[in-house]
Length: 285
Image 1: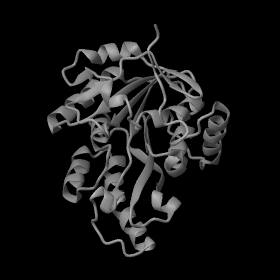
Image 2 (image 1 turned 60 degrees about the vertical axis):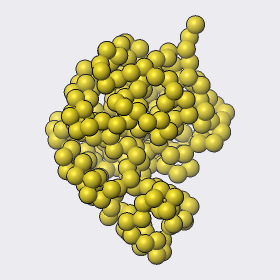
Image 3 (image 1 turned 180 degrees about the vertical axis):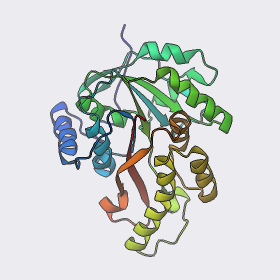
Image 4 (image 1 turned 90 degrees about the vertical axis):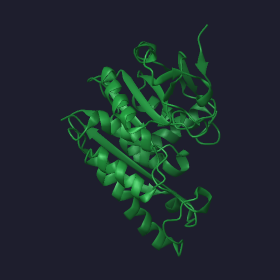
């Protein structure tokens, strides 16, 4: 019997019918500003909020890989609701969305399954959004790709380096790495107020400065600098561990390019609370 993980975000975070979801994702991709892609894209960093908020940002990265030579997409994402030691993988045959099924690369899971940092655990995936929200856009740009779903929890610095090395066994010209993360979560409900919410423009300016301090280190491939900046500012980057793991594998040999940056403030006008989004692309050396 096929084991399929059903969608739970359809109708809330993105459209629930196949027709409307195709229209929604295709409109996001069509509106994405064209950018010059590297010769080959090795990885992308994309946000994971509802499409209303971050879909336009994510689409700028997905558009660059549309029709690419990829057979595997390794999605490294944070676990928001379950405290994890190390990483969890979902041992199923496919994910389901209104657009159909996304196959899981079970051979890749087999390569990872014997490692001490990785465990098979379906519980963290039950209501997690950081992987599922990527799938409809991925289906539209790479309809035949298989995914390797990885949720990351707590890793100490040595384990970050170790996990980065583990990604090497999945790397290659047919593999795309997808880092699923939002950037600063600002406001009282996130328990993060590095500056007062005086007005929309002040918050927008402050957030951009704060986020760019992290993004500049990411695009430079500066893992140590990124980790120091997160520690010094306490910036609430939910995917800081997936980002660090990718940087540990990537190093500075593949420099990134920021494609688009935005905040939920730009959509809602709410400057008391805001989440930041960035799309970044990494090419081959």
